[in-house]
Length: 500
Image (tube, rainbow, N blue to C red):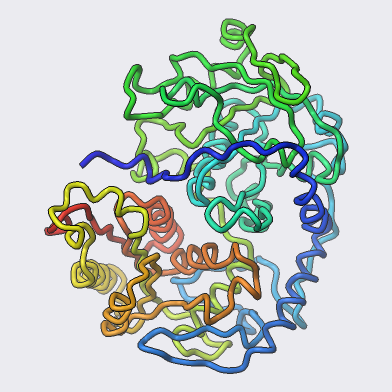
């Protein structure tokens, strides 16, 4: 069975006109301009949370109302299955304590109307855009940051776009999901977000020359990869097609990878000079600009790789070892996720989070890749096969750590819609978070079901995932690295695919 291209089924996002951008600007103006904003946000969440007062246990699935402060226990103790930074901000009286806001040391000062006015003369930068589902977008930003380390540049990271949760949902800032100060401290890599460089409410349209990698690595679309991010940032891009030698496997249509070092070559003067001179006009101002030297820019880096398209799946992966492993959740997300886990297992709010096993079962759009199965029902592994993998994880944890996790300490996340399948899950004694019943999207926002599921998975001591799902791959790597956990991957595609 051929490998999915990391299951990137999302079509390229077309770039909207700049006139659509202002509806997002007020959102960013309210977000993290001062870190106190997060404190006020949490206080509002607490007030909403207090309105929920009942628990319900239905068919092994515990509905999780947000009926108390999403606070850690008084001693901030956690098990190894739910690591939380000891030095992270603690909750007191429903509020976080924050240091006074200061602008990033990697720019000249507070956000400016034009991004160029905020770039340091002694620093070079690199940026790129996202154009897929959320996990794939995390991988894209990971690739951007890794490429920054190869080119001695500061990565400028944008927001996450709501490609999988509805276009009417506002984007969410990278730093509202991942702890940026912690990343910088633990990885030793500088990082700045676009909202720190350019004022989100700016009306200035900045022209920028960028490299078009997408057209050099695939043969179906004869244009740069589309993304809404430049429009939200009010950037007018003039693209130059990258040379064909950036493609990892020349003339091979089934792999769209470029190599990191081929891309890095374009960031240095000698190779840049050999490949510039034929830029496309920008869509708004008709500007023709060679790729910028101060703010190096690529259209799409999801398919950048070190050695093969499945780098992240392997222990050698440099993007995991040097970058993504340091993308830790914000303290707020860790706190909410721990609250959900306690409620799922019926534990008091001041209890330690016990060791547990998480399962991610992806079906949904993977049905389009079931061509090797004789019958549709043969494509995906049945629950007894998944349970076998869970037992393997249980046994490894017993042997390696002396920890016995019962079947009643298993949390399942899945896009499966069949009620009979979920009844079978409940019959195994496994639990799930019912985000509809918990009103997760209503209380926290529509981004949070997918974010909290990933955070819950990453807090597990054992994990069972779905082969070729990037969501599973990243959760598996987190459990292995963050928790020294035991993991397994369930194969699928035809009857008996996971037999072993």
